[in-house]
Length: 185
Image 1 (tube, rainbow, N blue to C red):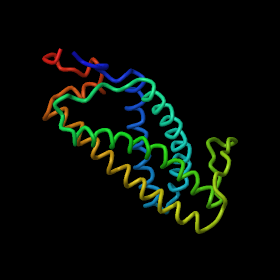
Image 2 (spheres, rainbow, N blue to C red):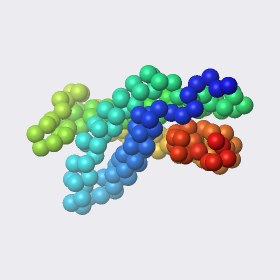
Image 3 (cartoon, rainbow, N blue to C red):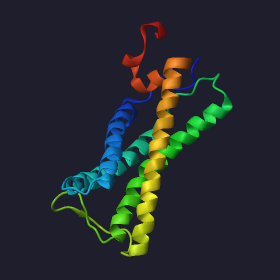
C-alpha cells in the first residue's frame, strides 16, 4: 500500500513543465545576451527581464503548491543516499529558481538599470546603485545560472535513470496518468 499520492498534483505538473520550458528558454536567452553585441542584444534583454520576473512569480506559486500538497513518495527500495540526493537537488532547484531572478533584479538595480515589465510598468530598485555591487551581482548571477544549468542536467539524468533504467514510477508520477505504460496499470 502506498503512503502518498501516486502522481504529482495537476497544478504541480503544469507548473513543472511550463517552468521547464521557460527556464530553458531563459538560459538560452541569457547565453545569447552574453554572446551578442549586435542589435539583437537589446531585444534579448527586453525578453530576459520580464521572463525572469515571471519565473520568480511562478517559482513562488510552485513552492506554495509543493508545500500544500506532498509529492508522491520515492520508491521504498531506493538507496538512502539517492533519496537524500533527490530531496537535496529538488530544494536546490527551488532555491535557484528563486535566487537567480532576485539576484538579476538586484544586479540591474545596482547598475542603475530599470526593470521594465512593460512599457509603463517598472519594478522598484531593490539594491543601491554602485559599480562594485553591480560587478559582484553580475558574477553571482552568471554563477547561479551555471549552477542551475548543471542542476537541471542532473535532474534530467535522474529522470531518465528512473524512467529508462529503474522503471520505478518516478518519471510517470510527473507525466501524470497518461504517462504510464499499459503494463504499469
